[in-house]
Image (cartoon, rainbow, N blue to C red; front, side, top):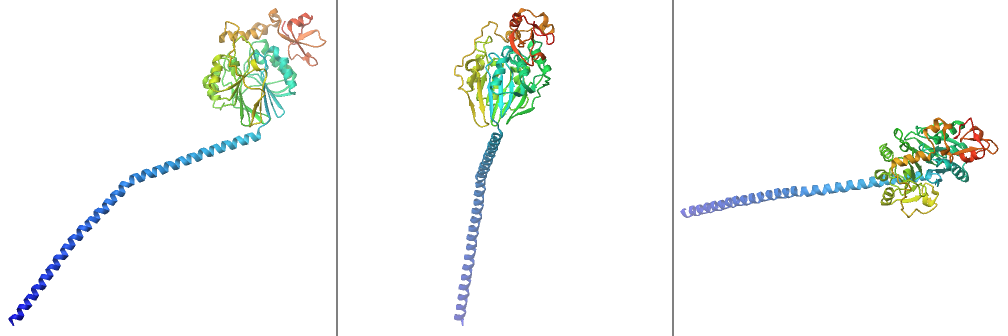
Length: 440
């Protein structure tokens, strides 16, 4: 019996030990599992941290992608603009006419004939003794009617021959600045306009006129300039298709600054150099704005002013501009169909500045010489009968059979009009007309 109880007790003890071992093993496993779980959590947190650390370079990558996208958009926008510009150029070329611009050699002066699709326009007409020359040139070009005549400003080397042109041709629109000059030359133009029934159209900046398939816009004068006749010059920007021509008369640096400030784009392919290449015009700022490929200088060979001046030639040369010169090459002609621009000769290659023939080569003496060149004084206009023999080379007009000599535009010249000097008219025994009061 005791032996049985011992076996039972041993069995219970053994069972208890096994149970204890099992419990102890479970605790250890839980502890290990807990440590492993904690490690996993820490690993996830580390992974999250790494992910967060990778977020920064990821954002930078996104920023670069955005920047690339923006650059692509800008490139597409620029390409789109270029495409639009090309389409506009193509459209302008389609509507362009057949344009010719004749820079007529009139010595120390200006005269430019513009022809387009059967229409004609004249800017200035040279000095007093060049009226017949301009008339003959226009007639040789088949001109019968002038749609536009522009007298840029009332100085003799620009409007001296205009009275002849106004009288000989049917002129539709005559544009001149709203300023008078107290000279016989200016008075001849005014009297001819009265005799022909013409009216002056005053320039308004921004107004545009059509001539065939081309058009021109008034860019100057932008204000009043008192007695500074040069700065009153009418400025014109002529456009035919993709080609642009700029004319500014004798506008000087102050007037150029006013043009730069009026908001009109004056960039041009061809720049008619202001004031015959004088250093009082074509400032660096103005030349930069025009940015021409070609320039034309109208000046007289061996003129007394030294035009064109070295400063202007140096600016043109530094800017890579090809220059044409009437003093070296005679009459210059440019032709444009809106796409292709051609010339009747190659540009000048001399870059030789003019040499002044007088010691008084300042702007003040230039203007004084201009007044002398007009061959007139204030008294000559207010009282023509007081003129002296100093005006013996002034041009007057006679008829084939008449016994009088006349001013340009006189009503008695309708059937016959012959230009002679005043001294020649007197030598023939002719006397002044009482109607038009010519020089005496």
